[in-house]
Every structure is written in C-alpha cells, then in structure tokens.
Image 1: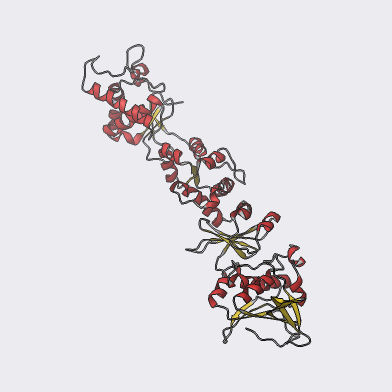
Image 2: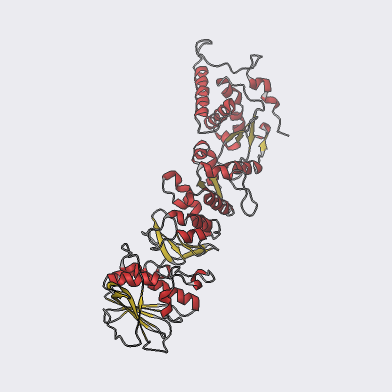
Length: 498
C-alpha cells in the first residue's frame, strides 16, 4: 500500500462511510474515479483524460481540470453536477468515498494528487472513540503546486478490473453513433454483444433483445431518482420511456429502415423489443413510407391477397409485414409529409387509378385469333354459365406493370388479354378462371374461390361427357328464357366499350 509521511501539516478526514457496498467489485470503484475525471473534462473543456499502466504495474487516471480539493471529500452532492447545465456522468458526491472504501477493502492502494493536496487513506481510530477503526483520508500538502488537474494512482489493481471499468463507459466503447436526438443517442449494437444502455456515457444496463444501444443524455427527474447508488443492473422501468422518446425523434434512414425491417420480423419471432412498442413501430413505418417503394401488409393480408402482393413485388415494392395492431394504425394514416401510407388498401387504390385498357373489337382480330374468340359461347355453355351482365372483352393491355396477367373480373365484365387468344386451351382456361370469379366474387387463393372453381369445372365435365339431364346434379346456370346468357347478349352484336 502507498506509504505516507504524517507531518504536522497532514490532516485526517473521517470519511464516515456507514454502508459498505458489498456488491461492488474493484471495477465499480474505478468506474467512479474515471467518471469524476470525465466530468471534470466536460466541465472545464480540457483535453481527454488519460488512463495509463506504468512499468511498476501501477495504473493512473489523470484529468487536466481544476484539481481535487480537500473539501470535495465532505460533499454529499456536487451542486455543479446536479445543475444540469453541462451533461456529466456523476451525480453522487459520495461516489469518491464509496470508491475509496471499496478499493481499501480490496487491498488496492490509492494516492490522489493535485496542486491543492495529496490524499491517501488508512484505517485508524475514530476521533473520540479510538477503539473503533474507520477509514480516514490523510490530506497532505501538494508535492507539485504547478500541477494541472488530478491524478489518481492505483496500486495492486488487477488489469482485468481496469479493463472492466473502462468497458462501463461509452467513451471507450467502439459503438458507432447512428443518430443523436434531444433526448439521447442511438448507437450501433456491437456484433455478438447485448445492447447497452448508458446514462450520460456510463453504462447502467444491458439488454439482450435490444436492436440498438442507447446513451440517454437528458434523463428525467423520475429516472434520476430511480438510478440507484450502485448504478448497476438498473431496472428497465427506469429508462424505457426515455428510450421510446429517443426513437420517436429519429429520422435518419439507417435507423428508420432498421426499425421498419425489424417490425417485419414479428411473424418469425425475431423482433426486437423496441419495435414491440406500437407507437415506435407506427412512426418507423410512416417515416419509411416516404421512400415511396414499400407496401405495409399484415400476415393475414399477404395470405389472402397473394396475387396483389406478387404484383407489388413486380412493381419493385418492398412488402413490410406488420402486426395487426400496427396495420390497423396505418389505415388511412399519413406520413409526416402528408402522403397517405401505402398499406394494401392504398396500393389497390393506386392500381385502380392507373388501370388502363386498350380494347380490341372482335372484327379487328386476326383470323386465327377470331377462330379462338368464336369459341367463347361454346366454352361458357359447357359451364352452363349465365352470371355475367357485361360480357367478355379483349384488351391489348392490362394493369401497368402487370402484363403477365391474362384476365380480370371487374364486377361487370371479364377482360382477357389479347395474347391469350394465341391458343384455344390457354384462352379457355383464362375464361373459365375469370368466370369462377364472377360466380362468387371471391379473390384468388381463397378457399371460397377454390370451391367456386371446383363447381364450375364439375359442370364443364358433366356437359362435356353429355350426362343426361337430371342425372348429373349440375346447377342450372341458364336465364329465365332457358337460353344460355351468351345468346341473350348475342356475340355478333359485340360493341367496343364506350
């Protein structure tokens, strides 16, 4: 342990430590010393602190501030630190005394030097009760009155404890800052490491399922009260609201995209905790919407509207899977620029807005196309089908960007792409498929549509096999006149729409 020469100028300060922090390791005590140095750097605007290992095995922690004074040992709180005018790490004036007690208990020698004094520690009899030994600070005159700042020398400190103490500070971490907000900073989580939560640069907690790390630079008063004396293993309830506040302020693309993509991981159980906060998830989606190439859809919507989802991907849209509670909040919502968020409903509206046909009259078809077209009535007669008020139309074009779609039922008409007339088999398949949509008005890839299509194919088979009437159980799809609907419409009178 460090020796000291007691002279008439040496004064003893009873540190009056009533509680021994049994849970503290040496690294926690060294943390307090480093925190004081960093605070002094911040308060005085001086150069970076220095942590060095010397050839004799001692370590020093050095700042270039105003230098420790004896009265600092008597403070319970530092008014300068609690004023909030400058963000600092330390809050408790007793932090240094705690550190001295822990280091002494762990047989780690301490010597503190400044231009004002030199401080070491020893256990000695309490004044008036010499039979009771307590920890005292021995305050001697300085050995260098021109010295800048404060140097704390540590004897017998384990290098692993020094490294552990450094790891408790953001300053010595390799976490990259992704975005800074008025409440704190979003940091990139280190690969293979848990997320870290810092308060003014000192780590207070780790989170295994956080997407990012955070440094809260503007803690609430409630949060300050909840930060315990040890500042280790601080409960999540102390910082949850501030983490939310930080995320509700982010705008940078790298953070927004990471959050929105993480929302989509809920379906596979890999979502991080931050995006389970509904407000955070909704805001991330709204910000991502501004990129213009995303569609937000719930898992159920993607299953029920797989054709629409496929079309969106062919439009170079990124489909972001959102939970039901987030999807509900996005319906009809606008992003911060006033643009309506593109959920599935909005995307379908956009499709309808740009839906264009270039209709072709039967008279303008080529001879081989016309021969296929003329089989329309026969094909539908096999299905015994009549439920079609507007007839069948041929178009050169379908929805923009979806030219591989060969047919569509719009509620009144079946419209078939002209290229489907290249062969009878393909045309008949598209026509019957869309007729099944007209039968029950159900969308693709649903159980209801499959049942309609199955019934329709059954009718086709019955009529193709010429099963006698009354023996097949087939549904009569003729009109009240008993004539097939295509004869009622009379294909020879086909008119170009409009």
